[in-house]
Length: 389
Image (tube, rainbow, N blue to C red; front, top):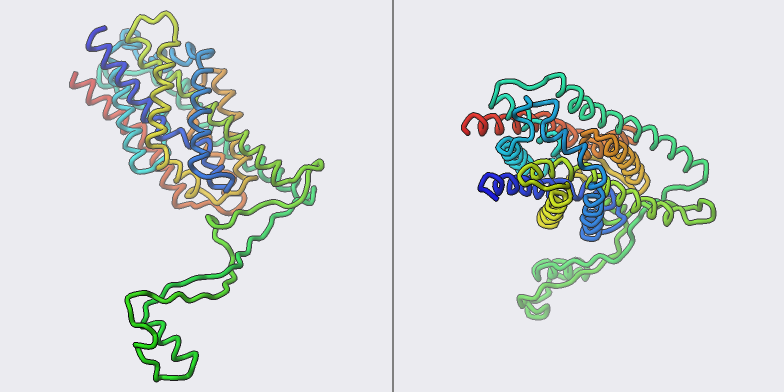
């Protein structure tokens, strides 16, 4: 194996690791935001489900690989070339890594597309614009809009169904003892006010360096991260809360597996041309391992943005978003359509946030801006590398 092949495989593994860091927690972010489970448990499910989806992608890998080796986009003498795949991998990896550092959930698919365009323009000054529009941009632009509309409609209908089944939301009120440690000088003032005396001596109260504990009963509305919203009532004789939690976990697992199935062949395409592998299996295996490693090491940053900052959610809204996103991504995978799991997942959350009025539009705007700059940033890096080399 030559140096060029090693660099190509190394670039593919780098973008796979960056992909895992940016994407592995997206499918399970609603489990965290909806209070179903802790971030550690949710991410463990996300990593394992992504790995399972990556392995299953061997069944559909070849068609997706052809797309992301530049077939129909780059000139025939560039598509699938070792040097081209290396440049694409490096440019996309840098773009996704930067987004992860700043906690932006961007699309690896978008970064790869931008890098393919950039390397084509940098190397020959031309790409197939019609191929770019039909094979890449149409699915990338249509999928988040479809996700937002379907999620909004599904959430509205399920909300009406919940009310018809007399399944109501539970209000959370926190009651308990509050303990507060105060300095000794504060304790003196409290003692004087409670006794009406101003003659308390420091020696009697023990003016040591030990603070005094004050206790009182408090009543208040729990914060989102302290008190989980639940549903009360039954559906077909089963507790609504238990049933919904189960559906939510299944939907998150499905979405994570669908992401692994859709993303792995795209990344494996960058490595498979480096070595004369007769099948896609070895490349898929290496990419799956790198995605798992990157996710375990650095998935928490973007997961936090997805679970808390886009919209407030509960188990119902989270499960709805996941089911819509997972269905779209699985369908796209089998038809070899290069949709972005990030765009689809975020689009579903945007739609639900718009319907329930709980979207954090400033964060949504920041994410959309990050999406807009992903393609040109990756393209510029790839064009510079292609020109330099």
